[in-house]
Amino acid sequence: MMSGKNFLKACLYCLLIIFLWAQSPLTAEEGTSSPLSLRQIVQIALEANIDVKTSNKEAEAAKHKKNMSRTDFYPTLNATYQYKRNEREVTSPFVGITVPKDRYSLVASITQPLFSGFSISNQYKMAELNLDLTTSNKKRVRQDVALEATKAYFEILKAKKLLDVSKETVNQVSVQTDVVNNFYQVGMSPLNDLLESQVLLAGATQEVVRTRSHLDIARAYLNVLLRRPIHQSIEIVDMLDYKPFECDLDFCIETALEKRIELKMSDIEIEMAEKDVQLAKRSYYPTVNLQGSYYRIGDEWYVDGGEDIGDKDTWDISAVASWDVWDWGRTSSGTMEKKSRRSQAMLNRSKTEDSIQFGVTQAYLQMQTSEKNIITVETAIEQAKENVRINEERYKEQVATSTDVLTAQTLYFRTMNNYYRALYDFQIAKASLYREMGQDSFE
Image (cartoon, rainbow, N blue to C red; front, top):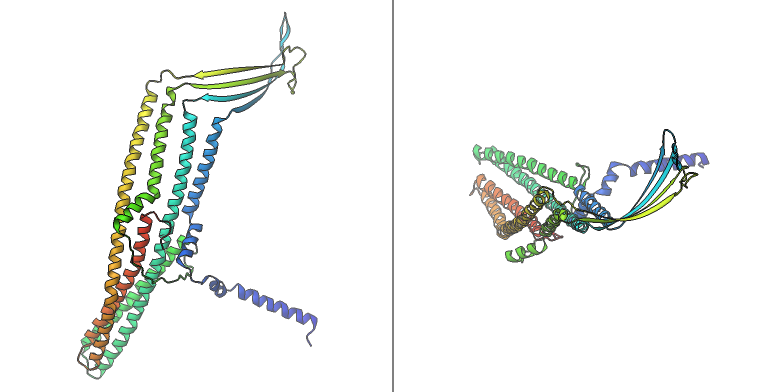
């Protein structure tokens, strides 16, 4: 029978084994090896991307700046406390002590702007527009990051399929090389057939190395987008569904001109430029402030008069108008500069619109090209597969050469490569088109 001490040791030993197993790399990798869907990839990228976080902070800063600009409409309170020690008391022969050796003073004032040449309202409107601009930019950054994640997702899928095809090519060419070698050993096949098959096998092997490198690069790039360790393994859900795109080019351009966030940002920049023009004109008007002040003096720190201080407190109210009547054309030149900036913003808006139309057209045509290639290659796959079967049978009957078989196999695998390239290039082009149209989702 196990003693209590031995039983405790056994329990601790079991717990240690369980803990080490739970912390093992295999277990940790299994916890993160669940395939991720496109939606999950995009969500992770949006949560982790630094550009997204930076744009969020920029919008927060613009919100605080707007709140700060609002305070310019309200009165400002100010308090000043002063202690002054003179070298000696100054005594007047008529009224006694006029300036004490120790003097304390307290001044409290309130200032309310009444008119500032419309600068306060224009600055506040500028802050509002800047908040709208940063909010729109935040949405634009999210769309860009979502597109990059989507493209990286399909690049991995394409690289995986091309790697699978290249591996299958090596297997098939290797089998055919063995067959040719056997025929060569018994004198049924010339040496050049064997050499040709060996050269093709070497080329197919190099293609495996190349496609594996492309897959590793694609995975590393996606890990960077997701801010994961660059060499961390990542598995994603395959998407082989092909759905034709039904919309025409005119609809895509019209949608883009209606929804693209960049056009909204250009409109905001034009509004901001207009407010800059109005701000530059503020010196054409006077500024008027209303100020009230309360004064208190004393010969002690609590400022409550003194023995020889007759009037310990007083107050006044004043209205102050200030106007720069001549500034050597500074205001006029500044206004003309801002008008030029406004014209520049309008031209940039037109340039953005042209760029959007071209971007939509380019993405649409690229997508159409890939879509037509899919339809063409789908038919060619069955034809290439049948061509391989026929040439292999003819080779067994010694009616065809090994070159015919290798050519048929190469043609088949090239067709499969073209199919997967067209399929995933179509998905990438469609995602790019959705982005050009201003859509938030690319699925």
